[in-house]
Image (cartoon, rainbow, N blue to C red; front, side):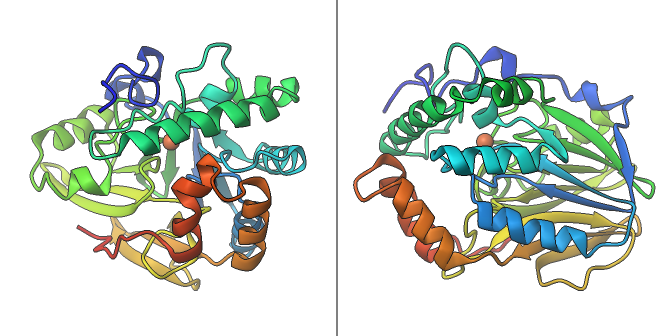
Length: 311
Ligand SMILES: [Fe+2]
């Protein structure tokens, strides 16, 4: 296996922060908050996401939670996706961080040991190719570099930390389904909620959706990972997923929902134009290309994951 210090496995120091950074801040307030992590350069998912968002009562806010770039290697889609995303609130994920930095850490995914060396190497290749596209647009890169890594939102009285990875790192895997399903009573999770003074961590990065409810001394906490907005998330499906947190319930199709402190939390389906996305993906990433080998099966059929989404 590639050792933990190789590009793609390494978690750079500048990706890290303390859970105390969330404690005394509130960056935005809304009655409806959409958190879209992992758009991965899918313009059709973006179109459907914006359609869903437009149907909400105001005040509503949309936060792109990083990795909105990945498969958008053609200049036209690269510009289109970034220009639309940057009209809303956005955080940088590892993809935007590596796209806009002078020195690359590979893909910046900080992949754990259960991810194969082949996936890691191909992700580094995808990043190298996407950087060549991105560097044709230095003004967009400068905007990506200036994006924050995290923020705190308030919906009603509910405090929500929005992070790309986990409570300590832009590319952390502690909020992955694979990790959370193995840690039923993790004291570290409780400490993170208490230190951050939030009731929800909304995250993405690890590419599978998961909701984990955590009993805290002061009430209940929740980790809500939307998986991917721009790729299928469950076996046999072809829709993306976005997190919705709101003071009133949704009328849109959802694949998980719960109520915390009177606030409605949903993982909404993003039913994008699957045929159009497959066509564009294959134009950009023909058979045998790094992205095709790693992702075509998932994009066309969904991942092997069958849930449960709620732990
Ligand atoms: Fe990521």
